[in-house]
Image (cartoon, rainbow, N blue to C red):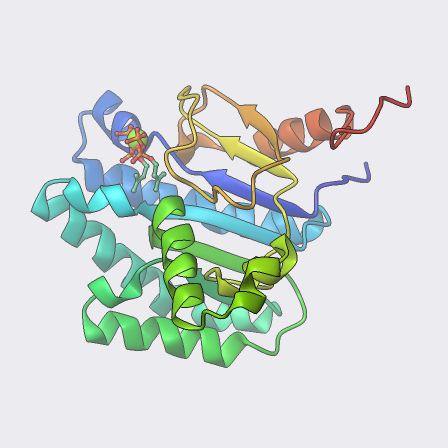
Length: 233
Ligand code: IPE
Ligand code: IPE
Ligand code: MG
């Protein structure tokens, strides 16, 4: 089947509950979640998705217990180390959005290296949202704008405003998937999801399989997107 989704965004939720159900520490859920992300990345390319944005760590996740935060940071570093060459060989272009200044300099360097090494790749764009908050992103854009401020800016269009967001190239989200039965946005991609189709599933993120992805993409194919215009069917 030909899928229509170009930009897929995913709130990968439920790692902790997945681990708890098995009597395992939460980090095991996060590890298994990273494997599910690897599978999703492979599948995305095959299913015609060009832009994939993954919510890996929110601005609010800094409030989790110290140990879990450090486990999650460690997992990002490990993931980049283990996956970089295979992502690069598969033509994946890596981007990272979020307040990276809060990360250890060595992890920041690792991220910048991964972004630089893959920046000319022409395959899937994989955008990882880490230490990311949608409000913080918009506020940061406004601050940058004020610094450059002139009366001319009062004429600014939405398209021009986008230049101040973390990733000016990011297209609007077509489909937003959230796993684990939660039905909220949790401060993810506020600007870009204005007209996204939303898909919620009870599956916990570590269990999210190829079939689950196909179900979501098929569901999207059946939706009618009006963008405010009169319905044509
Ligand atoms: C999502 O899983 C991963 C992150 C937020 C980093 P959770 O850790 O939120 O899992 P639950 O919601 O507690 O099950
Ligand atoms: C959202 O999940 C963030 C990520 C998946 C990285 P949370 O589990 O942190 O969201 P809330 O706190 O339940 O809204
Ligand atoms: Mg959660």
